[in-house]
Length: 205
Image 1 (spheres, helix red, strand yellow):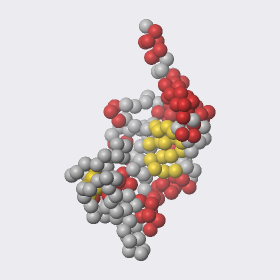
Image 2: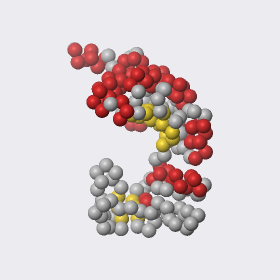
Image 3: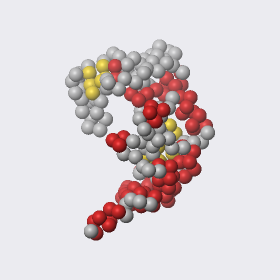
Image 4: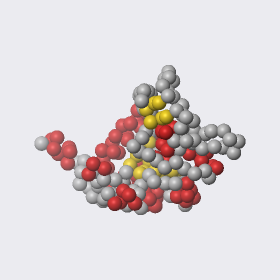
């Protein structure tokens, strides 16, 4: 019964829904220091049928309460139009920005124009790119040159020699040099590698 009662404290009110996250954050920052700790949320996400009954209330409250820890950053995944078609929920970014006073990073479906607007309007301090970086390992240079972008191909995460990372061509700089050429992990001799950023392993294709 005591175990059931403890679990019940973690749900119900918005304060109890946020309790686990806040307690874990407190424990982690005591060990590593707040400057080395960030947190990531997907307020409107419904991955694997997970969702919140009131995401605006829950995540606004949680981000506000996180201010006392002075975290390195909060990283928020916004819902795209495609996400909404799959039953995701749109949570106003302005409300989340108002709740959190530290560095705020947003991601999901941004391009150069929309990312610039978000930062210019102070809705976020930075925008992270995932799929576009997979397709364009030289993404900052492409943005700088206003160069065309490769379209992400999530079915192929291979690095193919001579085609740039993930089988895609690198962009050319004004001097004609190539940007974003493939780089094997140290110790590999194959012309084809699969990315494993955590284990640093290579696999022959």
